Image (cartoon, rainbow, N blue to C red; front, side, top):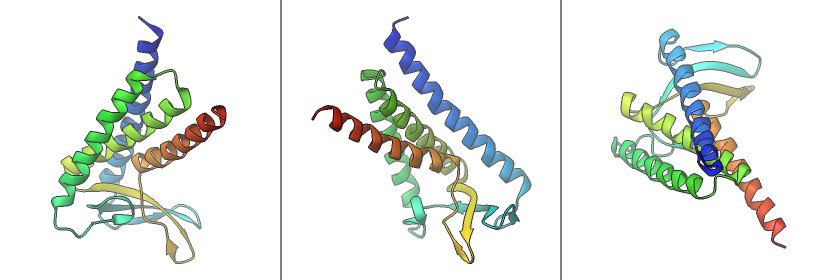
Length: 161
């Protein structure tokens, strides 16, 4: 097997790991929590079960249902683009790691949209009475991947100067 093919499969495995961790954590929360139930763990962190029919920060959450299909189609299109990028340049380690995290997160949330009609969120960080919007492992993968993608771009632009 060629090195590029092995690397491509490694990046797919990384994305699959994000999907598995995301779905396993959501199933655990769904099995033990009722909608809206909170479990305080620290002075700044709760576990809570909420459904988000929108996107990040509940954007379009009250749009009436069509947004489920928009966000599903968008995530699948982005994942297809990421697959192509991973296949073409699997040796770009930082970029490929970033793209794998993003794709794993996107697929994890697509599974929720298709299974539950909304994304399952359960990580609730807060300071005093101000709560960051609840999120999940898929969202974390997307955010960490986006930061790594930016770093990769800065690294590449620095190497070109």
